[in-house]
Amino acid sequence: MHYYSIEWHTHTTHSDADQTIDQLFAAAAAAHYDILSISDHSTLSSYAEIQQRQLQPASWLLRNSLEWTTYYGHMLVLGTQDGVNWYEAKPTDIDQWVQKNRDAGAIVGVAHPFELGSPICTGCHWDFLVRN
Image (spheres, rainbow, N blue to C red):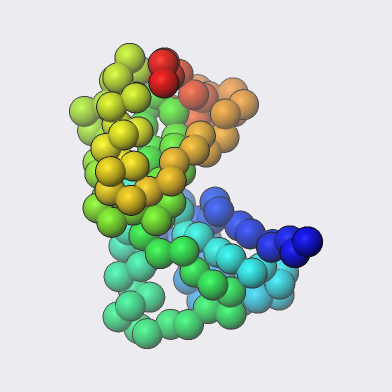
């Protein structure tokens, strides 16, 4: 059996981290990650920079991932073909938004389900009502 070292949830200076893309790639290489995903908060802009600068990480990079950052919870959206925005999502209709993200080719998951939330991290606690 083969195991892969994977980091799904990272941030860069494109959202709220202090590390640049170059620094993230160097840290991932030093940690020997096989697969890396950049999941900046509600933006795919890091991938535009990677493409523009033609950067090549040492690990395989899952492209077009982000962290849906809402007031009701944060959701990892991995490998999307379309950055579905979260602005109209309500705590009672998350199932339809999950489906829209899946229709866009993404795999989704709760970013940090046990976070305390406000005032420590506004929106970090998962308050969406999942029915399906």
